[in-house]
Amino acid sequence: MSTSEKRDYIQNVSYDSVIFGFNGSQLKILVLEYHNTGYFALPGGFVKMDESLDDAVKNGVSQRTGLKDIYLEQFYTFGSLTRSDSAIMKKILTENNLDTNEYGWMLGRFISIGYYALINYENVKLKPDELSDSINWYSIDELPPLMMDHREMVDKALEVLRQNLERKLVGMNLLPVKFTMKQLQQVYEAILGEKLRRTTFQRKMLSLDILVRHEKLFQGKAHKAPYLYSFK
Amino acid sequence: MSTSEKRDYIQNVSYDSVIFGFNGSQLKILVLEYHNTGYFALPGGFVKMDESLDDAVKNGVSQRTGLKDIYLEQFYTFGSLTRSDSAIMKKILTENNLDTNEYGWMLGRFISIGYYALINYENVKLKPDELSDSINWYSIDELPPLMMDHREMVDKALEVLRQNLERKLVGMNLLPVKFTMKQLQQVYEAILGEKLRRTTFQRKMLSLDILVRHEKLFQGKAHKAPYLYSFK
DNA sequence: GTATTATTGTAACAAAATGAGACAATAGTT
DNA sequence: AACTATTGTCTCATTTTGTTACAATAATAC
Image 1 (tube, rainbow over the protein chains, first blue to last red):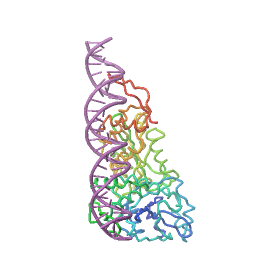
Image 2: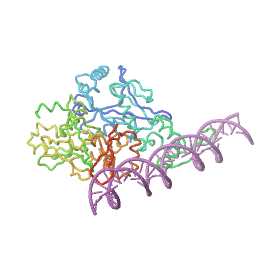
Image 3: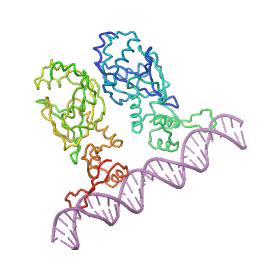
Image 4: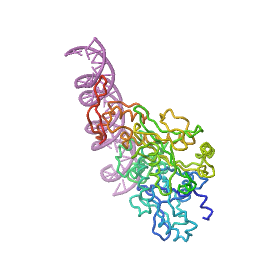
């Protein structure tokens, strides 16, 4: 980044992303850790003056995951005065040997737009950015302490995701193209945080008329092989 | 406004509000018209550097309606590049004899956070601001053409309001404290845009255990008087 | 007073959706 | 060939919702 870049971005506006993936049994999100600070945070970024908000988020999430065509939903905009913390940002800059004059604009108050992404866990190639040590998957019930209001963001993202689960088709973004009914049920259970009845779930899904049944999946187990399905 | 105020506001960020009221039969929203321009718009404003987003909206809506303790919900943040239109803003400034140098910051690209408000129609005392001719109620199905993306905002606000109708209690904000079952049903019908079955609606509402039944309301009509209810 | 009218509150039954359990089919193992 | 665990579907019970019916009024008309 160069000094001129300050003017390229909308001032005091950022975005943060809650990137959901599903490893087959648990719902996970991506969390990064800033160099030498112990600060864990959601992947975020800024919006260029000549770039739409959606594109800014899309590009940012793509860079970090190596994926294109990411399913994104805006879930809330965080605008309280107390959410920004200049001391935390200062430490992040200092530990990364960045000039706090040049990057002083990062210390101000930010309104941040939250997006969640649903991605296929297995296709991801994680790429830390310049400021961060690492970016890793964490189970949503085993998150490290997140800086500032990022924990609140995760909770809100999950709340909105749960609400959208009934209205929008979610599974297709977290699963491979072909999946078993059990896998689909596990996605629902992971998002809702509760067990569902197998027979009721299957009846419901089939009655929605959104699935195509394919060949069976032989898993080498000593029981009946399940069918594979895909979304219409 | 003075020149110094430019620095008091977050640049390139605005809010817009969809203020819903219910006149007894129709759902209405507040729309203002800018002086000498023919431009109809949603009430909006900017966010001061030392003010939370929620407070900015709360204050703005309060000033225009004369109400306190307004029920507000954030519904979406609009961040496309094409949504801002400097020609329209310029005309608004010119027709109000405002210097386009001093107020040039209003011509730029804005990310706008949408909130909807639910208020008791009857308590409102409307106050146009300095830039606008008038502020008036319009039925949601008889809106004038709105400038920029404000029509899209109304549609999105209504969509989110409908979704929230099942989850959150909405009637209390659009009705007087005590109301009849019929009035409550009319609010639901106005929001959902469809007729509901009287008996089913009544049974549902009573079974939710959220209403208190009070005395009857004698309307001077030749039929059984309905009970008044309030929310618990 | 008494019949009339329109609306309200609730009951009764039908239809649909969901919960819960049972069971046959079956892919691999013993 | 018997056994095991899981899947797909069926059945019946329970709950929720749709629909109709009807008694209980508050004012009006006579």
